[in-house]
Length: 325
Ligand SMILES: NC(=O)c1ccc[n+]([C@@H]2O[C@H](COP(=O)([O-])OP(=O)(O)OC[C@H]3O[C@@H](n4cnc5c(N)ncnc54)[C@H](OP(=O)(O)O)[C@@H]3O)[C@@H](O)[C@H]2O)c1
Image 1 (spheres, helix red, strand yellow):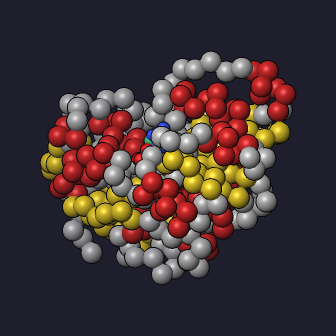
Image 2 (tube, protein in one colour):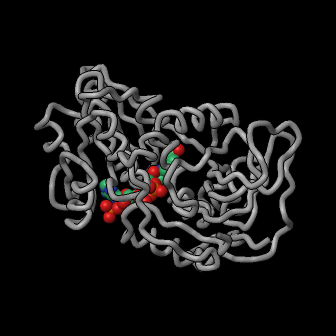
């Protein structure tokens, strides 16, 4: 099969498309014929040598995909060869085939195109697990989503609104501000020209913050929290080390949490996948949460897809298509 790796860290041109052995399913796994995968910002870090796959995982990039089941491993129940699915992966999605634990498969939500379904697993599982399972966002609360026009951001805005929260978001251009408002954000702030802390405080502070920036936003995020607010850090686009005034957090009885989905053990991923399929898929099927695909790029042009993400000109997800339909 053809697959994409980054044997020598570097820019988008470091991605290499080459032949690899076809995978075989281990016990409890299935092999998928991959129809599409999708780009995540972590893939660009992996390509640069900063984010290695978890121990034992393939060095083929790609943390999600969609496709059809080609083979079932020993002990797999409830799935059949030919089923159309999407999957959360530790690695291996940028390929024509991938082996995946059956517990990380999800049926394609009703009415969703099989290619577009590749854009769902990573963002849906990340947002559901962090904003709802961990931070416990409630209807009527305020959710602050940073990077609202990105893959995670577009999903978090829509899920927050669908489940009754007030959503404030940040993004870097006026075009993206308008885009996020169209997606349902109650308040969208251009972080280059406006103070997001002031905008959030004006409406009583954020009960939950979903943060992709890390160090550069830590103090401002804590400042923006409401009493008993929960800040969940999932990205470090603004660095890893910052000073935190604990007295501010203490006065608010606030919480700062940081998580990574990819590194979780398989049983935890399976629980998140099951909860996501139960709670998020009906909202995708009824149209309350749209799959936002910015572009479809052939797998062989993965380097162009990475460049697109690093230019930050995208809104939503960038999908990689293998050519299988
Ligand atoms: N921990 C986990 O388990 C987990 C799982 C998935 C993703 N993540 C993280 O989540 C983040 C988003 O991932 P993604 O795949 O959705 O990437 P993405 O589509 O590239 O989204 C990132 C967004 O951040 C925005 N941004 C850049 N600088 C910003 C700033 N100073 N303030 C606010 N927004 C800013 C970018 O656009 P503009 O600046 O143009 O608005 C872009 O829309 C990444 O940091 C990724 O590593 C973590």
